[in-house]
Length: 298
Image (cartoon, rainbow, N blue to C red; front, side):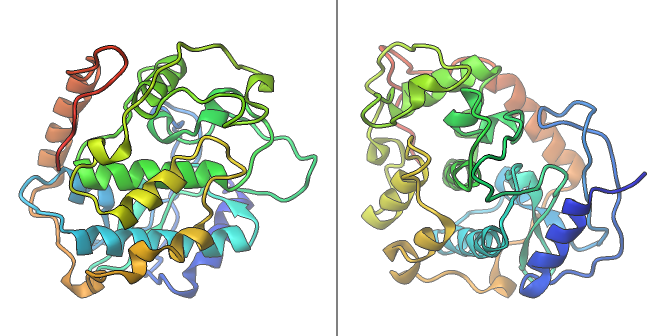
């Protein structure tokens, strides 16, 4: 099968710093909703683990320094990708690879696309639903780096909570969960929202302050989360802006790669844990009363 040239180009572009023995590409059919449909690139390497394995391994305690290291490497790779005018469009823990030296590498460029043309129209059916930005869920065909940055916010939240942050069952349910948790945006907060192709009016949810959801997070981390979860994609923080935030310069510093935790459970055990979580997530999280979720503690 012929591999997408965008996929090959993207792999080459990010190899500048996040080097991995690249022994081959494997193409398989799947979509962003885990069903047959699109290409997937897999680095064949015995020491490579998905970040999702780390998150699901309950025997591992993720410290602030661990999480900061993962986010730093993710944003560094994404910054370079965006500087080359490429959108990843499918960021999620399963597409972040960690090698035996603790080096994180962005993976799976089956949905990657070049961007920058002011009149270029894209499909909105990209990014796995749980990590999909509100503009994509409302059917936006013209978008930029904001779609990747929203996904980074969801990944960061998942690293903190150790469970998917907003696990929707459908696009409508995904939007409902976003607005219940973060509040329903107004036209003033997000100009042009009501003009999006698939826009529908939602109940006005007040949402919950991020400091109540991520109760152990400091002000610098909350500021980063706020920037990543900004509804207006034009105002959403970029990778370059995120890397300049105090979160990355404040103590504690990021853990060196060779000291980052390694997964202790077998892949089968992780799949078992994931299956359990998938069954649990189909029920509305406890505590969503009057549009507000219960306080989450990590």
